[in-house]
Length: 179
Image: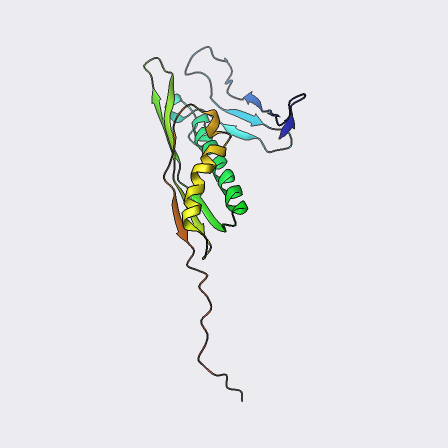
C-alpha cells in the first residue's frame, strides 16, 4: 500500500518487510548449510513466501526474485493497458501474458537480466478497434512505472483477438406451434 510522500506532490512511498526463514541452526556458517526461504510482508496483505531459484540452492516450490521481476513487468503492463483501453472505449474481455526474461550470469556469481519479453494475448469484444488496441501497448509500456524504472529492454509481442463466442443471435425461421 502506498502512502503519500511528505512534502512531495504526486510521490508515493511503498514499504515491504522481508524476514529470512532460512537459518537451519548454524546461520550462514557454510554456503550449503543455510536455507534460502524468506517471507515478504506488506501491511494488511497476505505474506509472500519466497526462496532462491533452484540453481542457487532454492526451493523450486516457492517464488524467487527473478519470478517476481518478470511478473512485476507483466502485471504493470497489464494494468496500464487495461486503464488505457477503458479510457479509449476498447472493451477487453480477456488478457493473458506469457512473459519471460533472460538472466545472464557472470563467472563471479553475479549477473543481470538482459531483457524481458511480454507476450500478451488480448481478447476484445466484437466491434472494438483492433488497430488502436494494438497501438495502446506502446503507450502502456511508456506509462508502466516498473518498465520505466529498469535499464533493460522490455520487449513486446502482443496479439489481438476478437471474441467469437458472442455472435449475434440468429433470427429463427421456425414458427411456434401451440397445442
